[in-house]
Amino acid sequence: MPDTSTSRVSHEHWVKVLLLGGSGEARELAELLTGEPGIDVVSSLAGRLRNPRLPDGEVRVGGFGGAEGLRDWLHENLIDALVVATHPFAARMTSNAIDAATALGLPYLVLRRPPWQPVPGDRWTPVESMAVAAAVLPEFGDRVFLTIGRQGVDVFAEVGSWFLIRAIDRPSRALPPRHELLLERGPFSVEHELALLENHGIDVLVTKNSGGDQTVAKLAAARMFGLPVIVVDRPDLGVSAAVVDTVDGVVNWLRVVRGSASA
Image (cartoon, rainbow, N blue to C red):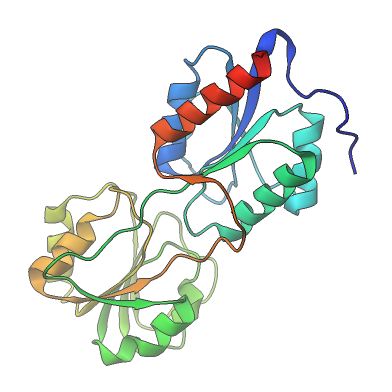
């Protein structure tokens, strides 16, 4: 266990922050913080995408080796505060980050965008996991628009339906025997999504409840066509953590941390 008895706050009351990113909110936050006096931010990306959108400022790419590896990195790099702004489905990374920060006694905050909510006209079926989505899928139709990214696609490998699979990078595991792979990155317009659904004769949409506005257009398009949508719920964090749902909430929190460091 690292020695944490000495002060971790850098000279002249600058607060050094590790921002675990990978989301649009994380990029927005990095841009804001690079101009914020008294705050030095390092963004960290998991490195799962071949060509990620890099945030402003200092960036590191790659994993840490679990909670213990992250804890050591935080200590060795004199990090004063931790912000977790990963994808809402990156539950393991979030849990590791909270464990590492807690072990070091570091202030931390989780930025989690609000989930999508159904509106009148939606035909949603919420499910708790990809496995459940795959199990119930044949009840909804034979032509599927699968929009869960590249991870988890193998769960549907034994389903006999035809799939239009959209991801940023090509999935590395087994794919359903009947499929078309569409590699593209949002944001997407409603018109774009309507054309996809119509041109491919889609019967049902499968999505994670990621939230945000980058890919929400597919839900509007499904609503307009009256299509059913299987919505995979977010994983539970599994721990009690301080959570905000806006970038401004993180900035305000870091200002308080900075003020406490200079007091």
